[in-house]
Amino acid sequence: GGVWHTGNQPTQTCDVFRNNGWCPQYKNCCTKNENLDPERACCACGGGCTDAQVPNAAGTMVPWTDQDGDGCSGWAQFCDQAGSEQWRSHGLLPSEACCVCGGGSRWRPVSA
Image (cartoon, rainbow, N blue to C red; front, side, top):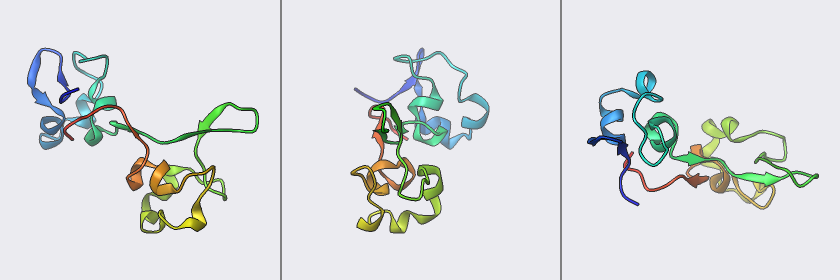
């Protein structure tokens, strides 16, 4: 557990990447801590969370979609509706499946 930081710089945490605006330029840069670079470890850099995966008809895990075939990226502007039962698909609401709406799965505890 604990807070992610670059491998040899314990003060360079996800908060530091966010506060300094380093994510676009340095998200894949640094010494990795626990095999996670800033892009995967830090919510502020687009990581820290993965959208839900659900089995398709063949049993292969694929990204969650709603009844209309829209994935989580399409829900960013509709998160206010993401908890409504009418959008339950594959057993999950967008609010449970999508990071952008507060759902998904967290990689690990991070400070971002």
